[in-house]
Image (cartoon, rainbow, N blue to C red; front, side):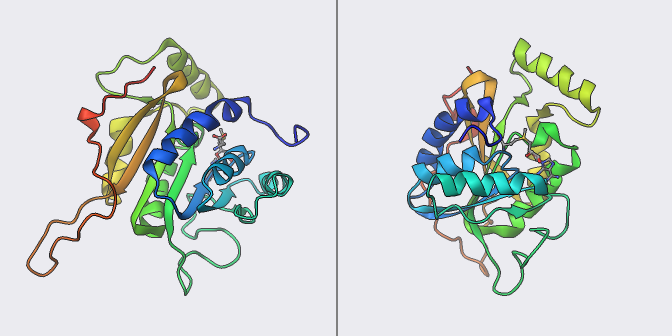
Amino acid sequence: MHTLPFSPAAERNQQPILDVLRQVLPAQGAALEIASGTGQHAVWFAAGLPGWTWQPTDFDALALPAIAARAAAAGLTRVQPPLRLDVLAPRWPADGPAFDDAPPRFFDAVFCANMLHIAPWATCAALMRGAARHLAPDGVLITYGPYLEDGVPTSPGNLDFDASLRARDPGWGLRRLADVAQEAQAAGLVLRERHGMPANNLLLVWAREPRAASPLHPSTPPTRSPDTPHAQNPQRPV
Ligand SMILES: C[S@@+](CC[C@H](N)C(=O)[O-])C[C@H]1O[C@@H](n2cnc3c(N)ncnc32)[C@H](O)[C@@H]1O
């Protein structure tokens, strides 16, 4: 297995992320993963969420064969053949039937780890818009990675990481959570849960903005467990 591309960080964070996914996601569903990278997360989460199918994708066509090989080696048929998907492209995925071709394909979860800080800022708005387009009505977008939070001291490790990213590419760098939330809101998504994760990372759950009840559109009953408001979430970064 280690002849395949391997990310030590993904190896370290996959179980803590899975533990939160098990709390956040319903028992069954279809997930779309953006920026799957090595495919370690896809395989780990599909194995750990037996009611879910997992659609891995990546911007880099060269990453796809290794993702497929990793899923095959794990014997996981619920990991679907990886697709090339650039969040910045108007069409998701890049090749084959588009998710919005008839019949459209909707996902119960869109998962994206560690892309927003290692890609141009425009990928944030694109991720939010694409997720809003392709999520089922009760679906959630889950983002994972390091963020800068107003009023929360940034760890020295994250400050160093931010500086090293910006040195590699001035368009990269840790994103301010308030800015990410603004892009989400522009796409009709709001932050529903914030989970502090090891190594000063956050797992964020974004959902559609609840529609205001109106005489024409009476309120739709929620089908998920009650929200965990950001301000009241007891979890803090470690
Ligand atoms: C640091 S890796 C993260 C991989 C994996 N999610 C993880 O956490 O281990 C960043 C990934 O973002 C992908 N990426 C960069 N720009 C992208 C874009 N515009 N659309 C989709 N994926 C992109 C890269 O190809 C790469 O796989």
